[in-house]
Length: 87
Image (cartoon, rainbow, N blue to C red; front, side, top):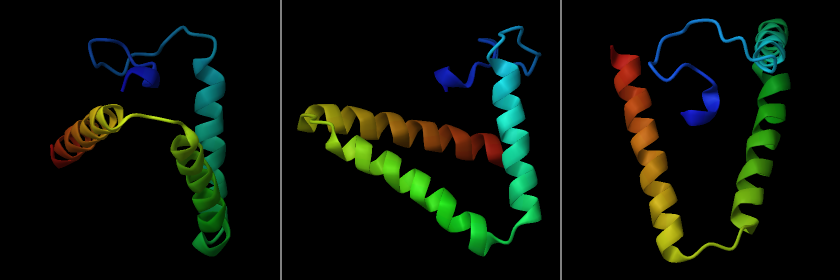
């Protein structure tokens, strides 16, 4: 995805972007939290974040065509992600 801040060529080279390091630190902190706490603790927290994002997305007034375009994009991204996971 374009917001992943990975190089255009798809490699996993380190990025000199100053915002990248804090993002990685947040990911590592979340992984530590998930490893240290049972799913019963962090699962509802994660669900609340995702549900909040879904609610925000639903609040945006989009036409039917815009919704179809976004759904097609999401489906393509999920398919690409699944294909990458299978490799």
